[in-house]
Length: 132
Image (cartoon, rainbow, N blue to C red; front, side, top):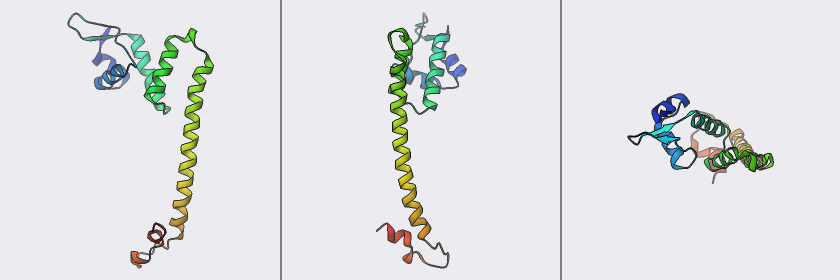
């Protein structure tokens, strides 16, 4: 068992991050010392690493919490439940990509139409005109 600072060091996060995870019910200390300090174990370390990997994949804290709950009671859940969470995230990502692609296309169109001459003042700039 080790204290919050040691867990933070092992996982490459701050103690405040761990307290935030605890406050949001993503992790729970394995116990408390006689003086009331939070105590953690190897399982807590695995949970924090799980959280960090899930965050790297763009999962929200709520999605991570759902996955952790499923992981803790894995025999009571199906793989399909896990896949539903990641499939929903993929759909959201695809929607964002489509939206960004449309924005990029429109911005590129007005950018390409601009002559960009340094000798011309901006009063005749086609980009400014397109935004009116």
